[in-house]
Structures are given as C-alpha cells and as structure tokens.
Length: 340
Ligand SMILES: C[S@@+](CC[C@H](N)C(=O)[O-])C[C@H]1O[C@@H](n2cnc3c(N)ncnc32)[C@H](O)[C@@H]1O
Image 1 (cartoon, rainbow, N blue to C red):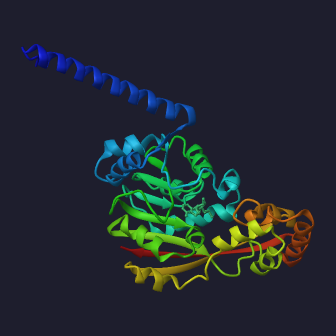
Image 2: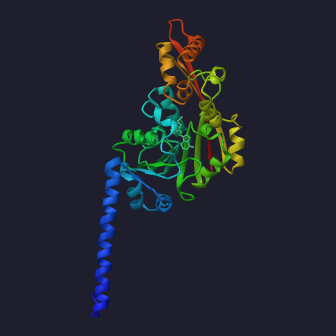
Image 3: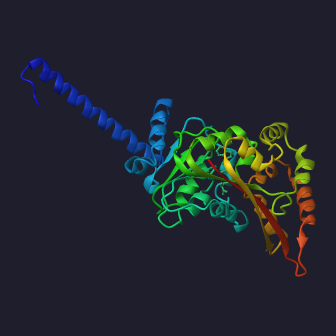
C-alpha cells in the first residue's frame, strides 16, 4: 500500500529499487557460478553457514533439499578444503575395476537402506555407494561428501539423471550439516585415511538421527588385490623427502577393534562382517594397472623409474598364478554396521 506522505513514498521507491538490484545481482552471481564451472562456490564462512542450515533441514523440507541437493545440480564447496587434493589424480579411474567398485556396493547391502531414507556418503569418491543407495526402490535423498573436487565432479557426471543426489566438498571429519540430519551414514574405504579417528566417528554419529545407522568399511588383512605392505615399506625410503613426509603424515594408524571403537563413541548394536572375493585376472599387467587406479598410486608416482621397475618385478613375482596362467587375487573387506 502506498503512503500519502511524500517522504515515505520516496523511501518506499528507494527500498523497492534496492530490492530489485539485490535480486538481479543475486541471480547474476548464482547464474555465473553454476554456468561457468557447474558448481556453486561459497567464498565466505557466512555463506557456508547458510548452506549448513539448509542442508541440515534435508529431511524436513523438500524444497530446500531440491534447491541445494536435488536434480544433481551443483557441487557445493566449503572453504575448508585446499584447492587441489591428492585424490584428484585417480578420479577418472577410481572404481573402474569391479574389484574395487563392488566394495562400496557391498557396504550399502550390509547397512540395508530402506525406501525414503536419507543417506550421507562420507568420502564418496566417484559416488559408488551413493549411487548404489539410489537404486533402492523409492530411494530417499542423498549427499556425497568428499575433499576432492575432481572426485565429486566425476561422481556428479556418473549420477546424471538421478535426482535428489547432492555433492558437498568438505572434510569428512568436520561436516557442514546440522545434528540429526540423516537416517544413514556410510563411509566406504575412507576411515583408514582419517587415521581411524574417533573424532570423525563422533562427527558421523552427530549427523545421524537417533536410531539412524552407520555403515563403514575398511580393507581386510591379507588382500592380494593391493601392493603388499612390506614392499611399500621397503621402497618408502627411495621417495623424495617431501613425499615421504607427506605420506608419513597421512599413514594409517594400526586398525583398532572396530566394534569396541564404534561402541566407545556411543553407537550401539555394532557388528562386523568380513567378506572376501577371489578373482582371476588375465595377466600380471592387469594387476599392476589396478594399482594406479587407487591410493597406492600416490606412492608409485613418487618413485624414480629404476625403483619402480624393481618394485614391480618383486610385486609381480609374488602374485599367485592359476594352472592356466591367470592371476588369482583375493580381496577382503571388513564391514562394520552400528546404530546411533
Ligand atoms: C578409497 S576412496 C573411497 C571412495 C568411495 N567411498 C568408494 O568406496 O568408492 C577414498 C575417498 O575418500 C576421500 N577422502 C579421504 N580423506 C578424506 C577426508 N578427510 N575428507 C573427505 N574425503 C576424504 C578421498 O578423496 C577419496 O575420494
């Protein structure tokens, strides 16, 4: 309603104009962020807080969920991650082999996702677990979290056509979500990279609603799918000092007892299942190629050519051959599920 006082009318006009400018500027900013790079970038912690509260309401407000997370629209960045991440280099190849891809799918089966449940996939990588969760009939919304922007971009491409999946760039140990935001949290082959951190477990528990479920997986002992630990140790000293420091800083602590650790953080009904698979590969070269598709690559790419050749020869020597000359590979994984 227009006021009859000239001063108030002028004030109302200015206010309207300012509002118009504000919306135009907002549309231009959002449009350019999404169209230039396919992602919305939060440059200030204030904007990040806005994102946090929206994502926290995922289960309660569908329109917010579809704005931030639905239609597979954007990779939402937080400011906590550095520009590039070591995992970027394996983003295109990660999970290309079934040996690795099925590990995340197995976790989704173990945790048993029900229709409509919201899922957060911690260290989602190329989104293997989140995409498996999306196959559940009447699947609820889901968010994949990773520190590697490249991983998230690949995940987003692979999820094209699947609605209600969102991608958030953040550290899995410091999640930008409100308390009790999700029904299910999964972390496939990730916890070891956080040094089996109990603080991370507590963070994952925080974002689960009471009664919500956690599923995590870690590599089992004696898997022959990956480079033997003693060979890594043997060649470690040949890496450049800066690479050694980097790897040492990120080295996994010894794996703790899963049930005990998860229970100590406040989860209940923790159980562990060990699954193993035996595969045959056509040649030793196939096995070697797989090593370049996952974390072992960080180690391999730091070695000089001679060391690499020696290591390869030693590693291939140890592979088990079938009578027909194929390579027999055993993959083991531990699945731990628990309830908040
Ligand atoms: C072995 S991959 C597993 C990917 C996926 N969960 C799967 O099973 O296919 C580990 C993933 O964890 C991510 N990651 C490692 N440390 C992380 C951290 N502190 N915060 C978020 N993501 C992390 C890496 O970027 C990588 O994508």
